[in-house]
Image (cartoon, rainbow, N blue to C red; front, side):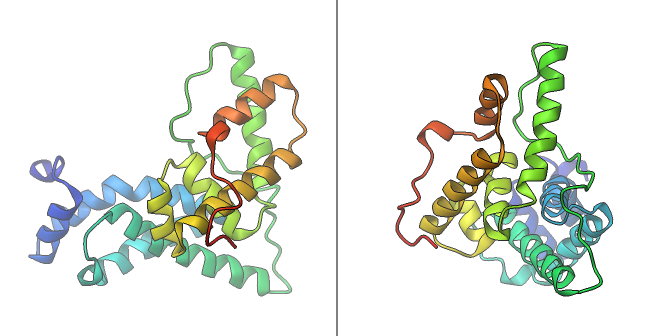
Length: 215
């Protein structure tokens, strides 16, 4: 596996298509955390997130001939995103099923979060993360997925458009509306407000709800 670790995604995909299963294992190692983290935040259930992660890679392997290049990561996450939303909607349709979003235990890491400067800041961030996770659970599915992908997992607008299958304008609109709802839901003091704006990356020059193609 070592000879494959530094190879770009498309080279690994080409190797897999030639029958090299080790190359696919490298892709799994490279992206399994991102797939699991997105599924976990959408479903707020560790077992379901694990199932979605396994299923996404199995589906990606069997559908690899349909990958036409570009961003393998976005292509893979689109498979996982669609499976997670299908599962979420199926659970929500069951009258006997209760998906306790606000009370779920979600501890997936946040990408790009700087180290806290003090124990007090660490505690404040932990509390804010819990509040943001609970607030995220109340957003419409499309807005929640967009905020998760952009602000937590660090995907670009273009990658999110590929993952969610919508236009760039729709991605920007969903992000703007999702952020606005988060701010409205979180009555924060000055310290927490600074942390929240740090979470909402590019918050001060973020996209406008008036973007073309918005929903």
